[in-house]
Structures are given as C-alpha cells and as structure tokens.
Image (cartoon, rainbow, N blue to C red):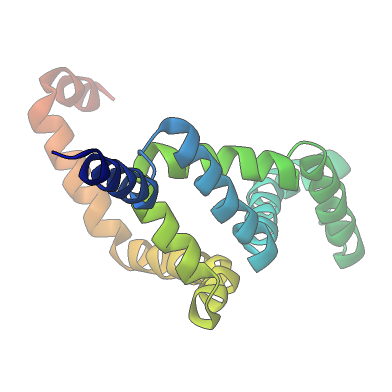
Length: 178
C-alpha cells in the first residue's frame, strides 16, 4: 500500500468513525433522559404528577381532618387543605427533583437510540400533545379501573375469600370459631 493510499484509508476511517453513533453509555443515557424529563416538565407531566400526588394525599387526609374537627369540612376548608398539601408536596417535588427522578428511570429502561427517538417525538406536535395529556390519561384510566373494580367488588371478595380458605386451612378454622 502506498503512502497516499494509506493516508486515504486512514482519513476515511477517521471520518467514518466520527459519523458512528456515540457508544451507548450510562452517561449518554442520563443526558438524553434528562432532556426527555425536561420535556416532561415543559409538557405538563410534572404538574400533572403533583396534582395526582395532591389528590392522593387529600383523599388520605380529609377524613382525618373532618374527624378532628368533629364535622364535615366546608368547600372552602377542603380547598384550603388542598392548598396546604400542594404547597407541602411542592417543597420536595420540585421540577428539578422530577427531572432527576424521571431521567433515572428513563435511563435505566431505555437505550440511547430509543431515548433519542423519544426526545425527537416529544418535540413534534403529537409528542407535545401526548406529554400534555399524560395526566388526563392516567386520571381517566384510574377512574375507569376503580369503576371496573367497584362493579366486580362482590365477586372479587367472594373469590379471594374462597381461595384464601383453600390455601390457608388455619384461616378456615379460625373463621368457623368466630
């Protein structure tokens, strides 16, 4: 091989090497995942998650508050409690915390090429819309799942009771004694 041919081959290898996709490293995944998590925040997923967290803590708190007050809460008091809970959650569920948490999960489960494609999709109008609606989807699916469970609660309880008695004979004996 001549010197000229060797240099052409070397140059070609350097150019082609520079065109290759970067190696799929944890650091690359983390950087790409942070970009997607940032898009989550801009698209409303963070706010939706905070709203869901507020609703969950509210559902767990309102009965206790009403019991302590010895009466049902007024609508104004319910809204005040929601505000208190939202502010308390906001003290640690910050956009930065959301980005850190979400990016860790994304980087753990997706490859760098997948993360690149996902980021590109989220930058499209359809992707932006999906991000904005994720909270709505989660809430509606949760409500539908709760309704489905409510419709089937009796058969569920009956089946679990029957199967527990079969699987755990000591439970059956205790139930007979009651």
